Length: 110
Length: 119
Image (cartoon, rainbow over all chains, first blue to last red; front, side, top):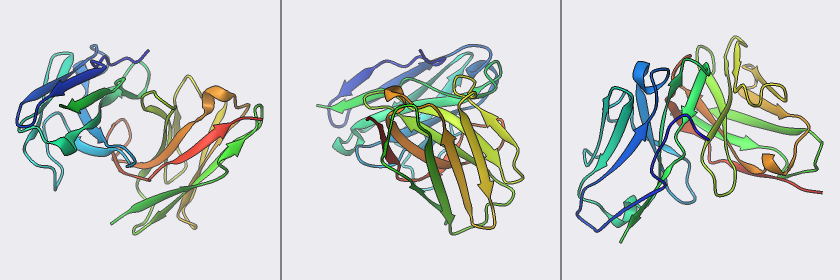
């Protein structure tokens, strides 16, 4: 069981906005920055958001991240079929002394 | 632009040692952190270990007793050894560059290599 809790799945129709939550504790999200990864079928995971709400070069601003207290969230607006895949939050955990991943959320575009 | 590529046997027998190598191209390993992450079939991502170019290491506590990570900057490679493997160690293994110690930004990643533990 992961230290970070994500919903197993979310879904939306093209053009819609969806959000993926990531719940942790004071030893991880509460005291460290959160990164989000997109993992599309057959590809390597890719950084989508880093340091809670920053975009790496090349990532469209349809993706946005936020953090409050011991929770973080990823929002995807203008949903597209190519967004379908798995999304993971990850942060450092002071108690475990290492990075911890959320369990992952499967996004389905209906 | 840094690129990473995993290599190693795709099939390992139970109780034996899994050995993988990650070759880094397009940049120097010196001054950076390097990591291994895995994904069992149908499950999520799990961080395994990371190493600094100087050789300083950090391991996932749940795997620490069986894992060794090492680096050879002269060859631009770092490696993973996992002993006493079982079917639960079957996974896609990724290597990745880690932004820094006590961080969680892995970028870039290798394409991953599937390792199956089976007799």
